[in-house]
Image (cartoon, rainbow, N blue to C red):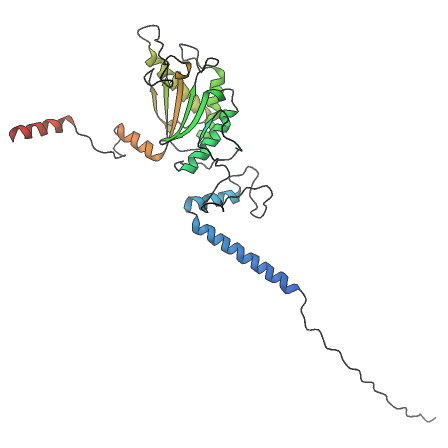
Length: 309
C-alpha cells in the first residue's frame, strides 16, 4: 500500500520578552544590612563615650548580673529602662539612680528596687545609687521617721535618732530595742556588698547620767559598739568598720535643745576613698600620706637655733 507524503507544517510564534526583574528579595537583604550597620555604629559610639567602669557595668547588665531574672535581651524594650540618657550629656544613666541625693521619710519619689554592683562607691552617681538602696530598706522598717540617709562630702551618713515615741535603746542603758536590732540586721546585706570603710558614732542628750563611774561617755560608746556588733551580724565585714566612737553630748543634733530626744542617736558614716585616706592619715598610718606636722623636738631645735643667732 502506498503511503502518501503529507506536508510538514511548521508554525512560528513570536516569543514574549522575559521579565529579568528579581522581585523584592533584595530590599529585605538591604534592610538587614542597614540594621546591622546601625547596630555597629551604636556600639562604637557607646564604647567611645563610656569609660572602663561604665563598660564593665554594661557587660554585667547584659549578662544578667544586675537583674535577678537573668540575662537581658538588648532588643526587648517593653520591660527595660534605658541605660543611656540621650537628652543630656550622653553619659551612662543606670535606672537605679534617683534625682535627689538626700532621703528622709519617703521624700524620694519613683524609686524602684535595684541591685548594686559590689565594689567601692566613690562617685556621685554611685553614692546616689547606694543611698537609694539604703533608703529602700529604711522605708520598709518601722523606724522610717527616725532615720535620715544623706549624701555628704565624706560619703553617706545614716543618722538614726530617738523621738518621743520610739527609742533605739532602753533609757539610760545599752539594751537595744528589737525593732532597732531588726533595722541594723536588714542594712547588713547591702553594706556587705560595698568595700567602703565605715565609722560609727554614738551620741547622747545632755541629761547627766546618774553616777560617777558610768557617764554619757561610756553610754554613748557602748551603744556605738553594740550597733557595730549588730551590723556585723547582719553581714558587714569585720574590717569594714575602722572606727567606733562615743561622743556623749558634745555634738547635739538639736542645738537649741540639748536635752531633746533626737540628740540620742547613732550615726554610721560610709566613707569614700579620699575620706578614708584622710582619716587613716590623721590617726598616724604611714601608708596614707597627709601634710607633715611639726614635732615637739623640731620646735625645740628651732628655738635653740633662734637663740644662737
